[in-house]
Length: 231
Image (cartoon, rainbow, N blue to C red; front, side, top):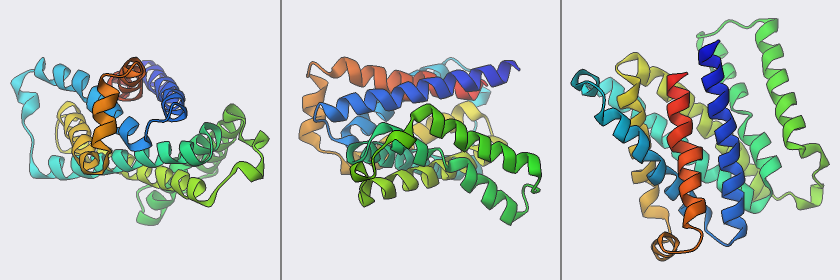
């Protein structure tokens, strides 16, 4: 039960991260710049935590690295597309589309023979989606406020999230999850670096909104992923 509570706390912080991203995007910041800062600032805490771990937890291998990089690509795509969806539609619709990820995970698991289909599992999927719809209030969104680009980005965020889940799960099987998480977040930052607006990124570092960026990094990645890992 304790592990579940840590996961719930991580999910709560991820939700706050989406709201903070919405604030920054409304203030005119580019979604990719916001995503980059979330990854870069969020990387600091897990890295410091890794430094405090015994040396044996630094030992990796090719399989752990490969799966961690795949997970990093997944989370980079997830957060970037999620923020782009927020820009084109709104947080409620973007969050609902992103959290279709469990459906993709289970479908692939069923097809690959990793999971057996049961009524209970399908009921869980339906309850997750119903809860997300009710929580975000997406049913109150007018169709005129939707855009094809925003919906596509939201669905893409869900698919990318599924890639992260698969990648991180397999990476943890080949070594220490502490090391895997750091490789994931480092990949996240490196992948986004070529695509951001460097002028705006530099401007953000000295702007009055830097506090929002720091909170986004801490809640959306740094603290939340540590909670997720611990759970």
